[in-house]
Amino acid sequence: MTRLESRARLFACLLSALAGFVDAIGFIRSGGFFVSFMSGNSTRLAVGGVRAIHDALVAGGLILCFLAGVVGGALLGSRFDQRRPAAVLLLIAALLAAAALLEAHGAFIVALALLAFAMGAENAIFEQGGEVRIGLTYMTGSLVRVGNGIAGMILGRRSGGWAGYLLLWLGFMAGAVLGALSYGSGNSATLWAASGAALTLAIVSLRLFAGPSRE
Image (cartoon, rainbow, N blue to C red):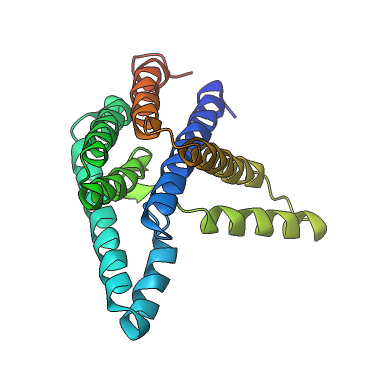
């Protein structure tokens, strides 16, 4: 593994932690909906369609916003080549800041929609050639890779790389714990902190990915 690959994986873990942080805030504030975990929202959409139409509408709206974020992030990123991570992260920072402002003025539903859009866009950071190389907000796939890697070790197969997916999951969990702790304390600045973190990561990405030297 090159140094760039190693640093990129660490960077991906930090992005996953940001997703966990924002998802925890959205989950607590909305009373059980997700802004990054669309499998959960898909289940809520299906069950809500049978038992609670309001829940179905909320879940369906978040899924659409997330999908729009994926499209928007991919379109924006395609214009910036090596500076793709910075461009997408600047968009995310702006969206999180807007969500913080909206929440402070009581427009939480719109703020929640912006959070879902931002988390969808985050998955475009490592998109290449129309394929997402590293999924940052959905952990089911990462856990499947970890499980397959462990099974491969037991069977005596070479199964390297799964530890990176374990780190992604751990990063997401760490971010979610921090989000729950900070938002649970009643501190309304948590979304501003998330926006600042995204801005910081955008600056870091310029150093990490841009430039002629990609060792």
